[in-house]
Image (tube, rainbow, N blue to C red; front, side, top):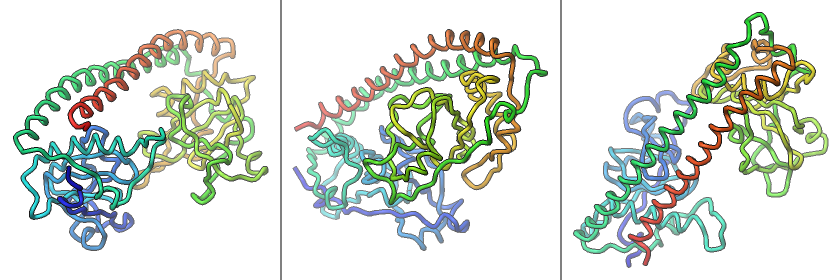
Length: 393
């Protein structure tokens, strides 16, 4: 066994100032942990100019280098496909002059296994980061190069079979998403255009923007806060991990969610802008963050599920975001935009009848999707099992 820091130099990264346009747009690829998936695949999205590299703490390292995420996204490991620079959450491993010949792929796979073990401590808790010294102290097993190459070949053979199954599961999920939209299109397509009216006609009061609090006010024992990563396709995630924040009674009263409220994402990338969810249950007092707005509905005019399904359809989202204001990397809608969005408002009885049909059809879709998601989780567990069989000492 060898100490990682004895055979590799660790090189950290940094982020050029994003407000300076002359630092970005061309030159060397720049990545953060968000650009690396759990299997080590990299998606290159941004490039940094030579001026950006010169005026920041980022470093350019050569193609083939193995990198390790040590902070946000801990546990991710990848091998660079081209010369790259990176954020401060990543460390690059550059072999020292006296390091014996080794396989970068072998190193990457071994570190994928090790870092997952490091991430999940023996006490069953998850740690969020490790120091440069802790990474340097990791123990590596580097057998002769032919043995490394044999192990890599076997891992990649097994991963190839696993990836084929995962690809089939992902295609199934994509087909389910298409089916879901088809169900919604059919339901809302039956409503005559004369029954479309501005959303503001079914709102009690006015839409309200959410609460902003600095990081220093977040804690382990405060009030739950719903953030924009907590809801998709009209539903708040059942397994969502709420952050908590210190609040006054007045703030809880002003920003507290109630069952029947509709929340809308008002600031995000264009692809996620306008996503919404209906508050269907609350286990405890919960507030909502500033990138969202809360809408209270007149339940004598609009059925919450009906409206949520419409706004989650392609047509509904397009209507909701038609006047979005776009800036660099994000877009926004305001309360007027939301209030002016045209929505189908047939009779309450007709809304409830169509919701029943929608939910009957989507329940089959949901059941299949749950099975697919469970299979995808099993595939990830199998990936770790393959690495464990290769590297567990």
